[in-house]
Image (cartoon, rainbow, N blue to C red; front, side, top):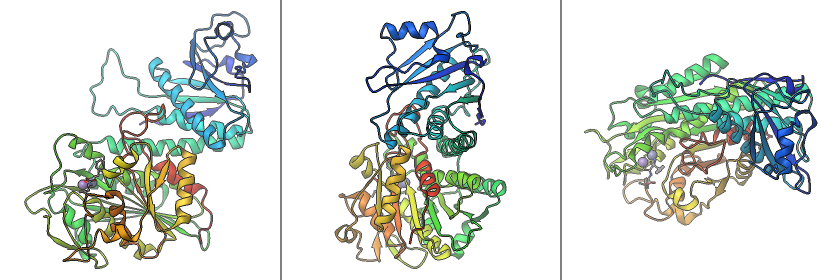
Length: 509
Ligand code: BES
Ligand code: MN
Ligand code: ZN
């Protein structure tokens, strides 16, 4: 992925000479498109007069202006994009509309193979200019995504590899605008890196790949990175991740990456992601139809490590520690078996009923270890943990389970704000009983019913009193709600929610 250059333009957009001049037009309260003088070319006026362009959200019109005189833009093409009405929308709705608009522009840019684009944004009611820039740009960068690494290059008809430069022309002060552009760039790049990791096949992205990425970020941003290998995990008695790794010839890793602020008495947010690089189910083998999708079982790990990229760039005033326990789940001859009893970090024993419920085993060690070592203010884990969350919430919302309503509120707000909605599920005593075992402290499945909740109940056994939330992203990490800025395939979900929460962090306790 090559970075897209983002620049601000003060000169008139008509004289922009790139591949595409984009003008985004909103409607007034009566639904009439608000045309802007400087790019009111004859062709656009005709289209509006005929009713062919009304300025509704996602309306688009491609023009090749020929009009002589001042009003002919220098760019060879002009794309007019509708934004609809804005006066009656909440800020949350407007942010999403902006991202959708940006995504739509990116899709058009790819069709036209437009590499240099000038983006003209209107002033909106109820939303500051720099926030419009942030969200449209975020959508545009996120929508400008493709994974071509394993495709042969076609010399005669080269594939479009992405937008090279976006020049922004919008109302607002220079400093605020530049800040918004940086924010959009950071978070979109991170989410796209998470998608890249997820798109890699199981033989292309291994536990050591997470370690390499962690070390790279640590070098670039001067963060601390500790990698625990198989022997370290043995010494620390992390029986969960070791058990899952037993059937594999690929060694496990636990990647720990730390950002420390210089501010005194800062709180610490611990984020943990499931980095299961391929889930065959192990001895409790999964059916082969669709098993290839289980290369995506590392999306939680991808999300938390990519989030650290933004943390490295922006250095927030709060400590952030990321942990990714990583292994694949294979059924080799020494694999974990149903009926086996394992001992987690910290001593809790677990009866393995189904080796395919492996995510909770690796997360349990990471939670217990991370909480003991870092004494965080709160901990959030992200995991493609259960198929049941897809049955319950489909592909539109991430499941959220927690022991802290304050943390729930923060995550719900961050999810709304970033277009990654969450939905809270209960975690009452009755569900916790479902994982009682006759032979060990707990067992790793809770029966047929409430699979998402019993999985969370398992994790909760390892967090003690620390405020904790679990995000089950099995339905949203790939195949997420179709949106212009989220192409099919892995979505990078979680990155933008975590980043929004970290950016807006206020003292927790
Ligand atoms: N990685 C899967 C969950 C999953 C399933 C994610 C489908 C995305 C799509 C997880 O490790 C798993 O296999 N969970 C089991 C748990 C069961 C055995 C209790 C499941 O959901 O079937
Ligand atoms: Mn599994
Ligand atoms: Zn899994």
